[in-house]
Image (tube, rainbow, N blue to C red):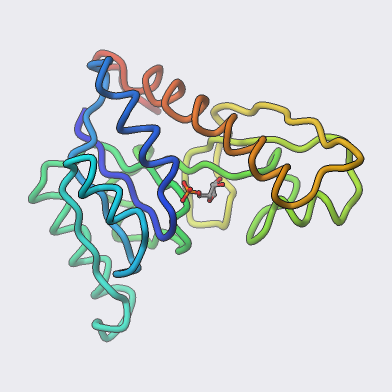
Length: 191
Ligand code: GRF
């Protein structure tokens, strides 16, 4: 399967997804797309030799026009599957309709707990003893959509935003490629 990864920020998940694909034939990352022209993910793409594109929403009259351009790009690149990895925008109906059941996201909590921004901070604030990572299909909601995989991460008393984030990212960097390999292996139809 030909995969596009969408990232707005650092792109560490993008990098682990690309690295894992080198020893596996279930998917190929052919495009990194960003909504942020300065995202570090774009630099990683250059280093990794993955084609990258970035469109700014502010160059478009509205989100509909923006997504129409993104869709045209994806069609041009013959993208089969979209992987959101730190993409900080809701996906609109243009992409959802065209890639129905073919868009996934990763979120740093055990959804439906702590959706939205700063899920790690939310978990620390709530004083819970465990949080984790969720990979789910994308629908029109924010961090909603059918759950594919979850893995727990324990919160220790002395964990801070930084230490917990590190633990969660370690899980993400293993779990996301592994899950994509399972999902995209052969020509399995995803429903
Ligand atoms: C990850 O923690 C992911 O769960 C969340 O955004 C973060 C992206 O990190 N959706 P990176 O850009 O892959 O380093």
